[in-house]
Length: 412
Image 1 (cartoon, rainbow, N blue to C red):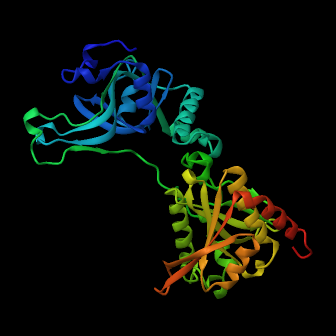
Image 2 (image 1 turned 135 degrees about the horizontal axis):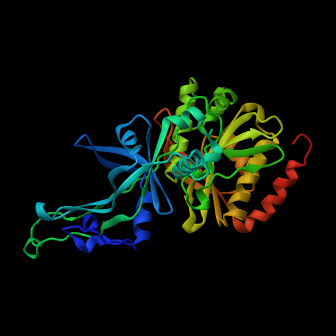
């Protein structure tokens, strides 16, 4: 617990106040930006900056040429106030006066001093980088001596500090409850979007930037003798465009053949956005021997509650048709579904006019269940009837033996 002081004792809503160190630390650790307040030449200043907490000290990032950092070089240090706020929701009451917000906030006061020791500064900057993504320090170049000299770090011991938390619903006047106005809470949260790689990046998105989610939504790498399935990335666009530059590859798909690289990039982006939304798990297919990108495939219609998933959004370059690649890709995906995830059912959907796809699905050992009429729209605007196939877990062992046997046949 932190001690109460006149500067950390609020005049209003003392019921929301806490000096609990665990609460204070959790808020500081979740927030990425704080507001740093100080006085220079008798004038107030307020700067937003990034921070990181290490034990009971708050470290603030800055430039060695900034006014607060220059003032902090003095022997007496720099008197500061620091505020952090996490907005959790908007509270809409029946009366305007009682509108509010759900939030968690921390205010700290004290004397900040410059971190001069090089080893300490590197340790703090490592902690700040790892706060952005745990493990990021090992995945990036450390600062040079010149860059380190240009970077300043302020250290503020957490001694005068308190937190305020508002949660819950509307607090209206009793006489207002009969008013015919909507009232309630609009929850808010900071949610990371899909990582957007910089131009020229070929490295995969690090695991610490992927949102933790159900294992059903994790695109783990699957390796076979003929093909490797790895998580789809934007860096795969050029390889996919080159491998599938054939009209026949796109004959029965739900979009036209990409006219250029940008068209393929749009297809990959849509797949990655669906992955981020939790509706699809896309892989790129590579030739296991050459490493060449040859196509893509996905899980979709993912239903962990009913232990069901569909395999589709598949297209591969024509040179790899009727080779061991497609058979082994499906074998790897079925093993992932039935053996790793405990699926009870796997589905396939294909255009009723795509007889080649239907034969391929039937060779896997799937059963034709029926036709979904006017199920999806084709690129030309017409509506297709979709043939529905499935395989259940009690059919999986026989199918695996059959598919494994096919991979050992000559030419496979």
